[in-house]
Length: 400
Ligand SMILES: [Zn+2]
Image (cartoon, rainbow, N blue to C red; front, side, top):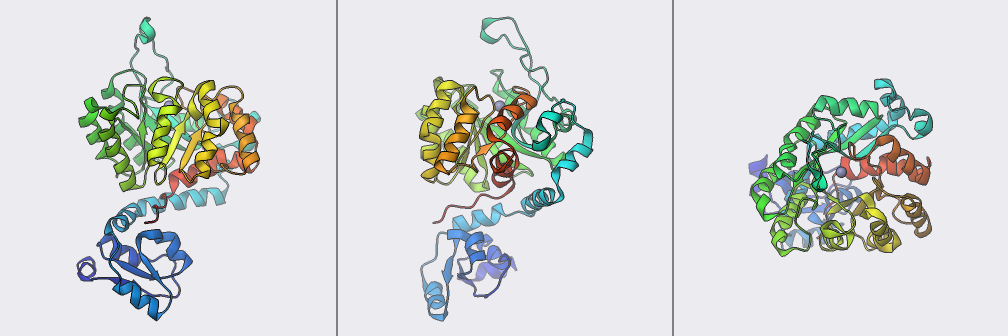
């Protein structure tokens, strides 16, 4: 079929009933312009990548119209893999089957928080790290290992998911020691984890630094591998979102994210190049069509105030595809954000639970978010559903 389809000037599917539209997707994959009957299901699947028609006259007009740019259609076809369909189905089945018993049965709750958080278990963790780092003389002191509990192998990671009652997790290379080869080197381990257990989705370590260009290209070449759902960006090891020298690297990273329908997972912390004032430029520049997950809700009191004081929900209201997790959030921040969401009636679907293990702790992070978000609709979204919506399913393409 593909060679035959590719010979067509235009492909029309004027069906009155369809469940999905696989034939039209095959045409898009072959770069052939597509005209579809204007059905809700087609609008949902194909968005702005095709033309729509309702009756013979509009069908004829659409067939004769100038072809649309084939690239968004090709990207859509590339993004809708069977693997991704299977992962999304699994998530739905898990929800239907009652995930709570599922994780409990796997291996109890070793961290002793079952009584406190029983109603909220299990959780979907939007951010934890894999890979053991060497001790390092941080801040001019003697060499220390600040995260001795880090999972060093896939088996250790899976044990920790059981221990923490984590049903799904987005797993990222560990970092903190200023040696880029370490974090880039953990990308393979992350891929291994994704392939070993369907609870695990992965984020790849990337960097816009010119000195990391070769490593970055190697990482981006893995973006289509099974289980990869995000690219990780942290400027703690150098570079800045607004540094012209980093722009080519950022463009490469965001182009890859668009190509594969991934999420950008970016660290924030107060001051310096990770400050939300500067990281926020990425939301401004790319957030219209790329989902951006801001780790740590801005980071520290100043970051929380800048984001929670309006900016985060303003971005949501403006149509930016921006998300945040509340790992490392301090004091007032989770409760304040919950109140803002309630007051403005937006943002319910933009907050994720994240443990940041081994840099955070699952019981503490769970307790803090649970206290602020409760065990109703808001908590259910933050602990599970928003993870599924963002990381399990293919993000819709921006309309043309
Ligand atoms: Zn982290």
